[in-house]
Image 1: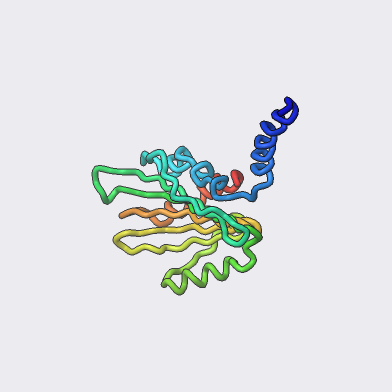
Image 2: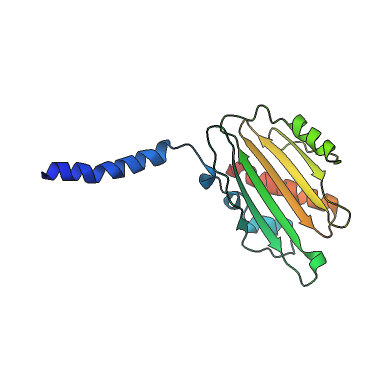
Amino acid sequence: MNDSRLRSIGIAPAIALCCATVIQPATASTLDSCALMKQADVQAVFSPRTFDQGTAGPPQPGTAKLAAVATCTYTAQSSNPRDTLSVMLMTRRSPDGVKNVTIEAMKAGVVQLKGTPVDVPGLGDGAYWASMGTEAFPSYQLNVRVGERYWLALSTGGFKGDPQRTIQALTSLAKTVLPRL
């Protein structure tokens, strides 16, 4: 084989890899909830608790028909299990818009689960929170729709906590995460 043909064989895979990377649709591997909501962000709003480095859940790759989904959970352990608190961000990116996933439809789902959605003005294109836990193990979730493609769900789970402070903390986290999308 001549030199120019060898060079073209060696360069072709590199060009193909480069182009495939550039034009490949975004997948869950590029959707990183731990990069959107960082440990320092969580610690700042839930101080004086100290949280771990965060654990990314198994990503759901996006396709032409399925949304990409990524999660990240931070946990503050305590010698008393009743003081343990977990904070999670679930990020969902639709491949072509979330026209059928409206705030109203999501709120209706909360009502079916015996929850009461409460509007949170000034976040994304619509937001609400709901308590989905029990009195013994409260869990609060803040849901935020962003544009036609993104849906964020920030949630907490723990044995005790002030509901108003928790919602304020989740709202503050959402305001930190939104510009990072």
